[in-house]
Image (spheres, rainbow, N blue to C red):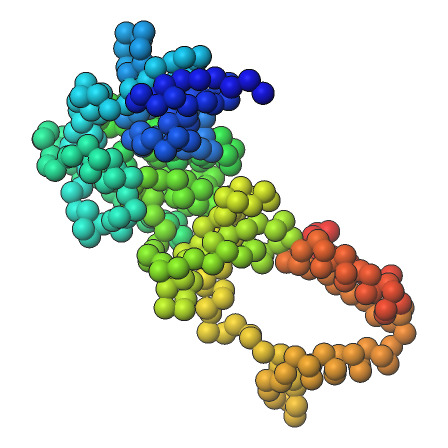
Length: 344
């Protein structure tokens, strides 16, 4: 494959054709601030923070929308570039709450990171927008319009990734905001509560309810169906406090459905969840060991012939487990009476 050569901040880099300047910089370890760019979304250029100087270009193009050309010379650290970036941040934080220490996204906020990088320490412009209402209708996450910076990552995610189009930018000028059709609450819209928008929000506009910062993460497989989506469980004090899709998984590429993202912690930690087999003795259910339970099941099944037995497989099992179930039914139990809930 032919590679293109370009120069970023006096450093020569080789990239594949079609690579954007932002992608080339990120691959080389060069930081370019941005709030609207996301690796899963099409280049947007909306926040204007990733502007750079390119030799031979009259204006400062956005790095996320500029395709690399042979021998391109790029500078990301000039005073002129930083002056324009600081002007953009001044406009964004003019109407943004300045409660970083008590904000739920503190130390996880991309706006906070960019402001620190540019040396922003105070609000330089007067506020123009009054307090906006908070949409708390969704049982899994909160939509606080007061933190929204109109980067459109949520609306583009709902369009490009999920294809639901539940939210979009409505109104114009200072009245612009992210909302649903007819400006109704999320739960009255076609939103599927998948949380993909929440996962990509750079600030605290969209946040999961009861969000807690984990101290460690464990990678595992989602148990809700047989697709095999990988997820990262955030752990704190021995409990699951957050769930994220694993980007290393080819099954889901970091994405999750509503059950995988919001249905794990409550289920695993529910006080009524069964964690041991129960055996009925004298009309009372008592806990027993797995070995005893399986022995009792095997003993009772041995009293029936193949045609008297039916097996129901589960969509919560992997494809490999379901294959073993049907082989067990046909080869060991001697029955072809096997069904699967996914048929419904």
